[in-house]
Length: 319
Image (cartoon, rainbow, N blue to C red; front, side, top):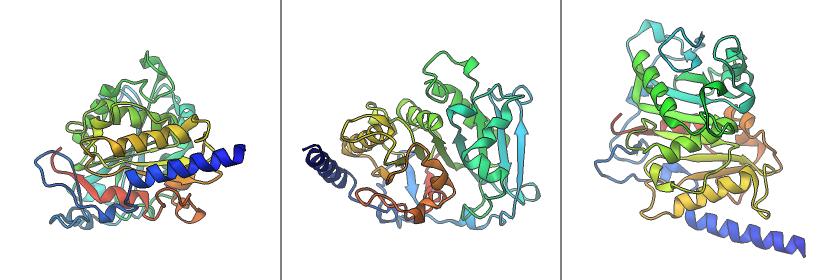
């Protein structure tokens, strides 16, 4: 009886997901032609090109610099990766903002090294980054100090997205950032912070061209705040339960469904990718790209485009 009920629930959820997200690849999306600062799909045939990316020098291995709290005007201490060639030209680069997990929080000074323990900063530390993105990117990884917040400590930034926005603006004006190509991602605790940014910061002024929360707790409100922002959600199939309606799996699926079913409809349908039988750590295979070959749940969107290449498909019309 329980097995039958589970299959029925899964079938119903799959049907709803198919209805809400009828496209499996963002290459098939044609963007609306309005005057809003929405993300423009490079592959949508609207006259956009990758010229601002193809002209960048190849990244053969860059610098990963620690900027401790107090040594800059930024609210946070952070690591920043500058691709090879950055110091030898005047070009602007895409910016990828990475939000760490709960275990990587720290004071921004003596504990800043914790940021390197997981996700994209770990790939950079282990010299596994330079061949991941098709084009060079600046990568910035701020460290959140719990002592600075008074909100929900399960979320990066504790629900105060103004600090993250100010930090993005600091990086965008301090370094040579292509301000139309700012991307946001985070894992677990940091993925919750990505969700917070999407639902609390209007996408007209968020500066973000596309976002990817990974292994995070999906919100259940304010879907329209980021209606013009492309979103790709990743989660492990054992990171919660769809049948019992709890955990990151259920809440992220619920968020994606409601986001895609909202009216007026979002500019781009959110994507949802699930790794069967994988628990909380769905970020390693997402960021190192092995998830593209390890197998994903066929009920949802396949991992058939590298996350970084998916980001590159989008840039904003205005900063």
